[in-house]
Image (cartoon, rainbow, N blue to C red; front, side, top):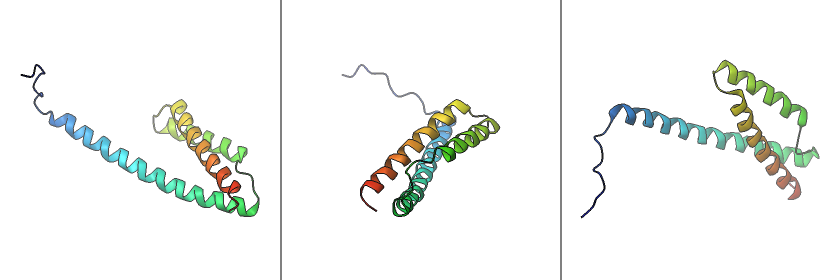
Length: 103
């Protein structure tokens, strides 16, 4: 005999919100995958051209630009900066791996 509570009645409003969140999460994953496909090509180009994996000036401009976009979108600019810094660090790591592999 189970002592757990029965599942509450389905909440159609909550289910609708969750479906929208799931769709947005899927779109984010696909967009990140596409972004990394493009940055992989950039890394390969940099390796062939003998360019450094990191471009601090561009990175700073991107962070500033995305912070401004976040403000315009009513998103916390601190969060947006943390997110893009994480993405940039991953891209640089991949670029270094590509360069080390001699591509």
